[in-house]
Image (cartoon, rainbow, N blue to C red; front, side):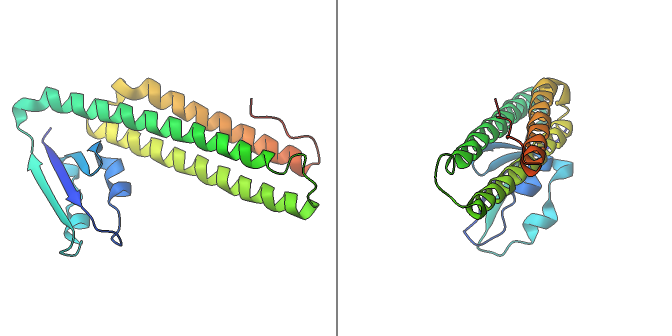
Amino acid sequence: MRALFLDYDIPTGNKSPIPVLRRVGVRASRSVWIVPEHLMPWNFFNGYPPSVTWHTVRFDEGEKDKLRKMARDALERELSRIKNSMEECLTKAQNMASVTDGLLVTEEDRKIANKKRDTYIKNLLRRSKKEVNAAQEASLAFDLLMDVQEALDSIKNSIAAETSAFIAKVAARDAGRMEPSRE
């Protein structure tokens, strides 16, 4: 596999390449990515204005093992970030729920708070699923799926469990029953 080391500097106001790069490469650091050469989104980067700078450097074929290790480490960091972010955001959503608990609020206030929390959770679960799928695509690009399969499955199972719990909680609330807790 031939891979590129991609470095970029994108001023505020320009479209971020991260959603495109997540599916084809792995992040080595904040604005440095490793991308298989055949998957490099040339058209995307060539479409930037001159204020955006970006450079690619081809990895030496003899560094294949180092490259795979760098890619595997980066994928493991990304999967850990996705899992931690999801857990932190779910805790935040749980705290959003408790803001109205015990307070004298109108039913309308409670409905507005529930809708806000529901939207937050739906967006979180959707984003988490999208990020995990992108990490899986990147693992395939580097032939590392077997190396990260357990972590991918763990996060996918967490997302599925949180989605089921969310659906049950909303259904119970809408039916007028007590909401089950997340624990």
